[in-house]
Image (cartoon, rainbow, N blue to C red; front, top):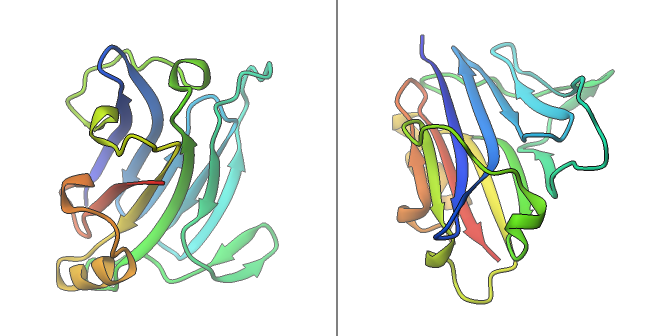
Length: 175
């Protein structure tokens, strides 16, 4: 079973800024924005939830709206949804919305290797882009068309595809 960490970083031509860490442990996936104090996870069982983390919160949280990717049945603090599987359907895990007009003010510098990173070139975004959506999906090989049907505005060059089954696809969509 695949275990991996993927960092989502935006590069403004001078610096790289840290937007999101996606951790995969088998069929469990965690979407973790830095310095927010909360993350979203989907587990092999189909249980998904937001989890608060211990942080040194001092008002310096990043500017992000983090959402569950798809609906399910609410049970207590959990959302029960279809689990990720290698032969299943393409499945939205989480969505994050980031303002990109003030990167240096809103996001921490990324100071790690770019080896396991999806690097978004800010200069390749349309000139009037003020916001981007970063989406994280589980996309089994037999259901790629479902991803594209649900995300028709996403360009192929704006998608990062991991290894593992199902592959984790991370996309960026400018607004």
